Amino acid sequence: MTSRWWAMMALLAWALGGSAAYAANDGCMDGAKTDLEKLYCQVVREGQGAGLPSATDFRRNGPQVQRLLLRRPAGRLGLKVPDAGAETPPAPPRPERVPPAPAQAVPSTDGRLADCRLAGERLVCGQQQYELASNQPNSQLADGVLAADNRLGLAPFKGDRSDEEAVRRYLSDAYDRYIPKMLDIGLGANTKSFTAFHNAFHTLEASGVDFAARMEQTFALLKRDKKTLGVKARYHNELPRDVSLCTVINADVIVCDNVGTNWVFVQAGR
Image: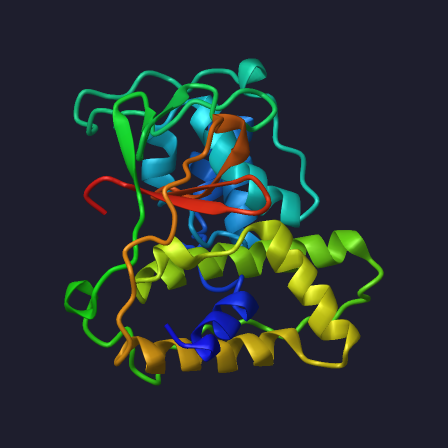
């Protein structure tokens, strides 16, 4: 592994994440029966629906899971997520509807994955299992992910860097893009914690370097070197010790970190 590789890895603690946003349609709010469903429609309408399931799939989850899925995108808009315990349950489904899918995880009211447990290299959340991501050989990657047109695509930060809330929203969006994008190019075991991500933003911007542009350059170099340089599946055997260190990126990806070390868990079969 070259020193340039490690320099690039130190710089790239951010990037794409989240699936394409589901477009809000005129009937979304009309079909919303609970406060959480109404908030879902508002979040999607305001352009923060990346990583959320379709409205139909969202309604199939229980209120606690719905609250977990909405917590981060709603927070970026400054919207309060209703308490799951106060939700009026939706009306029973009609016979012709598809039966509800199993809940992916049941968080506590403070947003932690209270119904999940760590089991070695697995994160078990009810009937769902997430597996610790490792670096993948290029033969296991999707076609085209290392091509030049597969871009990170971060927007430049336009706000006041002293406005920590604006910075947090910006970096939360960027980090939600970063984690899945690193998985796409087979570097799930080389991601950085959100704290490292945050610190790098301030370091780069304070020195007059555009964060988004530098990340795009770094991502391009990572893709280029990934074509020719071998990578280990993992570089340490450490595992997270507590589920309280974990947070949801999207329906398929959960990240745990102790500030210094990051672990990415991907839903089995993704």
